[in-house]
Amino acid sequence: MAIDARQIGEERQRKEIRDRWLLSAPALFLIVAASVGPLAIVVLYSFLAPGNYGDVKWAFSTEGWFNVFLSRDIFDGTVSLADAHFSIIWRSVKLAFITTLLCLIFGFPTAYFIATRTPHTRSLWLFLVTIPFWTNMLIRAFAIQEAIRSEGIVNTVLMTLGLISTPIQMLFTDFAVLLGMTYVFLPLMVLPLYASLEKLDFRLVEAGYDLYASRFGVLTRIVVPMVRPGIVAGSILVFVPALSSYVIPRVLGGGKALMIGNLIELQFGQGRNWPLGAALSVALVVVVLFVLLFYVRNTGKSGGGAHG
Amino acid sequence: MARPFSIKRQPGFATIAMLCFFLLYLPIATLVVYAFNAGVSIAVWEGFSFRWFESAWNNAQVIEASWRSLKIAASAAVIATTCATLAALATTRTAPYRGLTFKYSIINMPLLVPEIVTAVALLILFSRIKVWTGYSGLGYLILAHSAFCVPFAYLPIRARLESMDLSLERAAADLYASPFQTFRHVTLPLLWPGILAGLMLAFVISLDDVVITEFVKSGGQDTLPTYMLGQLRRVVTPEMNAISTVFLVLSLAIVTLFFFLSRNPQKQKT
Image (cartoon, rainbow over all chains, first blue to last red; front, top):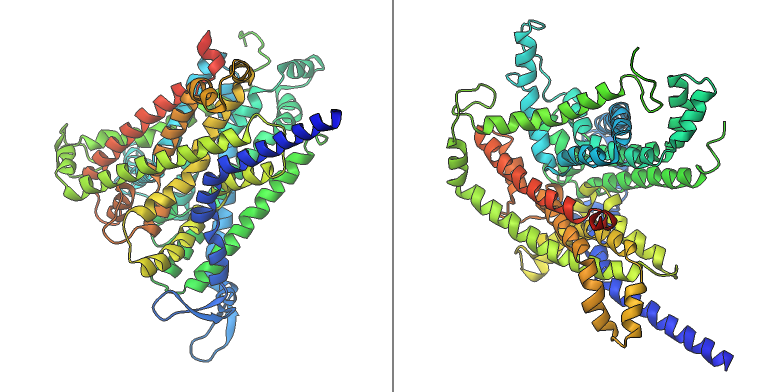
């Protein structure tokens, strides 16, 4: 009898799990078919030879990967480092990193400010952070473009104040891209930071003051270590999309301050070197996955890491 | 110095926060103001006028691209939300089972893969399919948008489901309701705000997309964002500001609605 009951229970459980697979099938299929699955094709293409007018020839070739790092002279076949690619990849990493840092510097106080409001006003402040986040990224990039143009508001104000006599060329520089990315990704930093700070137990802060800690001491030795998961999450959320930015460098960097995303696009457009573009794409995904892996490992350990 | 000691205060933080809020809104505000400029400049104010809204309204390309955007976003939002609702029902309120983590990672995957890479992958895949089938309609864009909208639609629905305990469903089952009846009369009405929130989120995300659309679209399939991206290369008039302003207002309306729908259900009761 007891065995029968258990069998029925197992039977029912098995049916439930099967139903749950059926229910999730459409979503899984959709994502695999039109988002994740095609990545396999990109990996495949990175090992094929480029066609004459875009697309590929169906022949195995490592030329795409070769071209990521090296370039071969068209005339004498000498091999040298692909400086142009290196400088663009390096710029991407550098800009993404500085953007993350800037977002942290501005985002942390903002998140702290919101988290220390009364519960009712908190949601209002939070809503204010979220609004720009939900406005089209292109429109925000365009807004920054207008602001920093030679005849834009920033230059106009500076000239009216007499601080400069001729407009500063800000558009189409690394600075413009940096500004745009910080502007666009700041909410991505503030939101996870806020989520961590909101849970912060201020009795610990009080205990710190009771033990004669300074405000700065409390901040660096109690608050920051306690919200470390939020800091890491926010940094990842900013770094990853910043590294793979395409729209912002296109709108604010012009043709001058390219990033990896634009380099990839070039290979599928004017460059007509699809294997190279595919190889660059795979490389980008690998970097992103490494960063995310680091995040997962880091948050896994953070439970015991707060002692000091 | 006279201020009472507050354990929560950190010097300078409020100032930086205020600066952040100011800087977050300044460029957008300027953009909106110059949409009403009477002159052709986007930086020199020449008086108030609606002329650029009129000119955008009379611009056939803009209207056509807007319609296309709305059509794609509506289709993609419905498809993505339907799939996401089913997936959320399948992945919440259960003891962990084999494959659950796999499902989570697949559903969240579109958030992790850089958009430009997905765009390239779809460009390669769809250009092949276009050659094979000869079909080059909006279907590709709708399919691509539906896929990357799933995780966004999934989030609020899952959150809502997790805040609903199973007691009501159990009660329904005890009263001999069939599983479908339970779903139709108990689960669905309770879940509805989450579904609507997911729908709106998916709609806005689809409406905003530039990168994937730019790569997947066939000739003459500009959506509003890709049209704008193309225009930014030329000399920009306040017509762009006018289009942006309308776009902004639309997004904000939807997001505000989303915000109210996805508020914590516990708070709504009191």
